[in-house]
Image 1 (cartoon, one colour):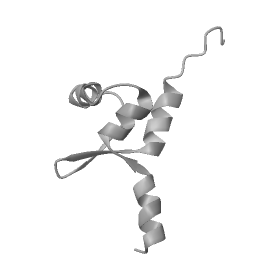
Image 2 (image 1 turned 180 degrees about the vertical axis):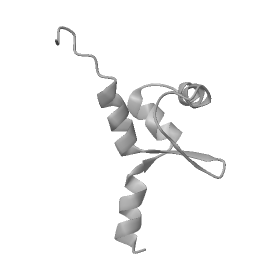
Image 3 (image 1 turned 90 degrees about the horizontal axis):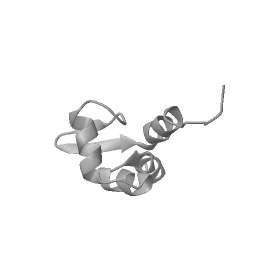
Image 4 (image 1 turned 90 degrees about the vertical axis):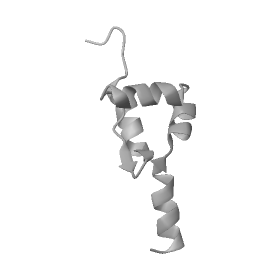
Length: 70
């Protein structure tokens, strides 16, 4: 895999710290969601937890509330 491909793949994946900062929440809240089998889909790589940014954005889109929308 070339450097450009590796950089592209790296930018598609976020750590719990990065996702928590992006969503204005805590890593503990993300961990609780994982424990309760809810929230954003995640990847386990050994002991490490990773999130696909596409999954983060899809989760936000699916949980967007539009008041007054029919």
